[in-house]
Image 1 (cartoon, helix red, strand yellow):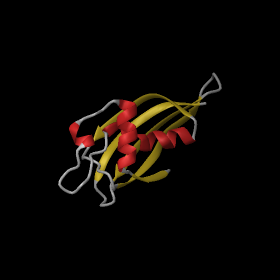
Image 2 (cartoon, helix red, strand yellow):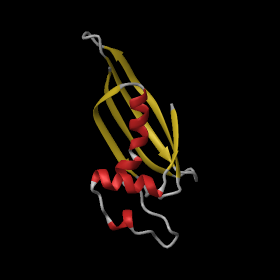
Image 3 (tube, rainbow, N blue to C red):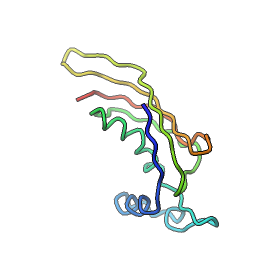
Image 4 (cartoon, rainbow, N blue to C red):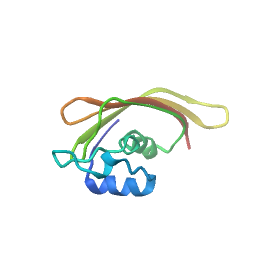
Length: 117
């Protein structure tokens, strides 16, 4: 499964308001006029894919590899590692993900597990 998103200044403003992450690098543009995206805003990419498939997350592990900036287009690929129906009529799922910027550079990777509702 793949998902792509280009982050905007408005995305950062809204996430700053919700998360209260007012780090100076999120509100002051760099020399190229870009803001640094909050790590957890970047992490919404794999959670979006989980949400599309009604995954109730139990664990999530993120490794932030390099900054993401406003204007960057991030591609996220999620790979299902395990999928198993349990006795209680729930299906457990474990997945890994990799997010790359428009230049093919890895920016975020990790794993998550949970149950499908």
